[in-house]
Amino acid sequence: MDLFETVADVRPSREAIAEGAVLLRGFARPFEDDLIPALREIVAQAPFRHMTTPGGHQMSVAMTNCGGSGWVTDRSGYRYDGLDPQSGKPWPAMPPSFRTLAEEAAAEAGFNGFAPDACLINRYQPGARMSLHQDRDENDFGAPIVSVSLGLPAIFLFGGLARSDKTRRYRLEHGDIVVWGGPARLAFHGVAPLADSEHALMGRQRINLTFRRAR
Ligand code: MD3
Ligand code: FE
Image (tube, rainbow, N blue to C red; front, side, top):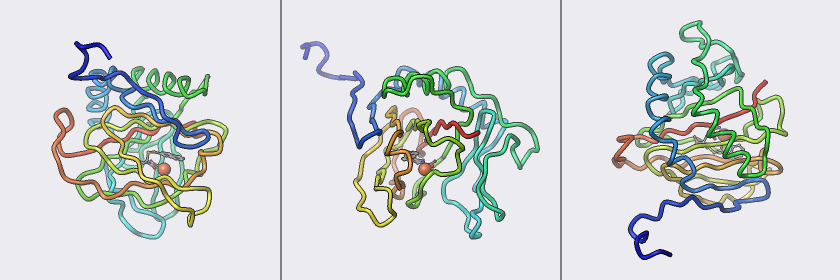
């Protein structure tokens, strides 16, 4: 390493988590100055809300969406919907910086031509968590999911194709991207309760963007 680059080595790296799953540490950092203001505009149009699961529980993670389709849950079930049920209006458009980042990350992981039509935006405040689940509400499991972590670090749990499979833990930090495709696409996964801290750009929260081909 160059003598003059030892203080802050911010070059992105690539790490295989499983077959089909690639961790791109720091890949979103060059995009953060575009992502954060765009996120602010989305949330002004479609505020974060705590949705209710079909079982009647309120989620600790608050959510919103952008793009042509948005993931929603209520007492009647999980689905993708073109309209925000809270406003009755279409979800905010996917900003060009979001789309470009998702396409570039997917291509870096070997998925050329990824065309997301949905971006689910999760907000974790201290204590918020996501229990072990599979993402199965999308129409085409051949398309990967691209996840972008911003703000406070989280412990991400990655399991196998059965709920009872053992999980491995990964610390996901601000700017990290994971691309989940191939055999990893239907793996069980979750997020441990968020530890309280302060992030220089994002404050006391973690935001996760997940780009999907939903419909
Ligand atoms: C592995 N979000 O929104 S992102 C979700 O950090 C979700 O907010 C978590 O799980 C979060 O559904 C995890 C990482 C992730 C996303 C989708 C996956 C991992 C995945 C789909 C298949 C396998
Ligand atoms: Fe998920």
